[in-house]
Image 1: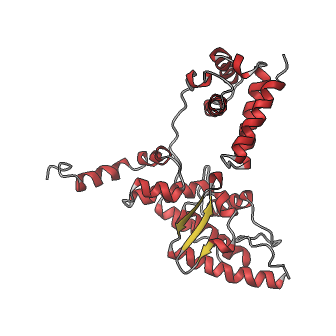
Image 2: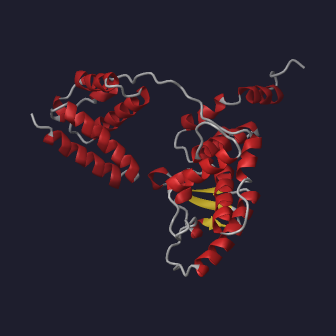
Image 3: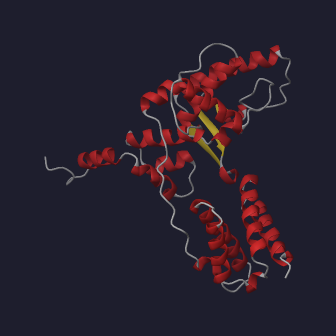
Length: 302
C-alpha cells in the first residue's frame, strides 16, 4: 500500500506546527525527517496504525544502531503527530501514547569553573573589529546564557545599553528580555564603536541591522560563533567538547551556585518547563546542602 495517504496527514501536521505553533524551521525539518522515516516503515492510513506498528518502528531504529537519545526523539515526534491526529478527530485512539520510551543515560551538562570562564572571556585581545567582537560575544554568552542561535540572530535594536538588557528571540520565536552584566555591556559598547568604524572604512551599507558581523560585514552565523568559542578555549588549554552551549550551562550553574532561584534561572534561559532547568540541580549538590543547612530551621544541628 502506498504511504501517500500518511504523508498527506504529515503535511497537514507540519503546516499546523508552522502556522499554529510557530515552531522554527530547524524543528520542522527534524519532525519531517522523523515522520518520513516512519512513513517509509509503515505503509498504512493513520486509523489503521496500532501500537505494534509503532513499537516495531522503534525496535527497528534501535536495531539499526540509532542511539537511545535519537530513538526517544523519534518517539516524541510520533507522540506529537498522533496527538495532533487525535485532537483533529482523524483517529479515535492515540496509539503512540501507549508506547514506552527507551531509557536514555542521563548526562550532566558540561560547564566551566569560574576561573576558566573568566580566563576564556578575557582571552581576545587587541583593537579592531574581530578581537573586540570576539570578546563581546564571549562576555555576552557567559553573562546572559543565550543560545548561540539567539546571539547570531541579535540586531542592534535588540540591545538596550541604558538598561543593560538584551531582547532575544528563542525557540518557537518566543521573545524574552534578559539582563546583561556590566563587563559584558562594556565589551558590547566597545564593539559597537569598532563595528561603526569598520562599516565606514569598508563602505558597508547600514541596511543590515545585524549586531555581530563577520569580516565581510555580513551577519555572523551559528557555526562561526561556535568556531570563535572553540578557538579561544583551545588557546587557554581547555580540552574536550566545548562550544557556546557550554557557556550557557556555565551561566546557569554559576547562578545556581550563587544562590539564584531555579525559576529565575528558568526564565533567564527561556525554558518552557522547569524540568528542563532542574538538571542543573545535580551539578552542585554540596552547595545546595550547604544552603539548606543555613536556611532551613532544622537544617543544622548547631
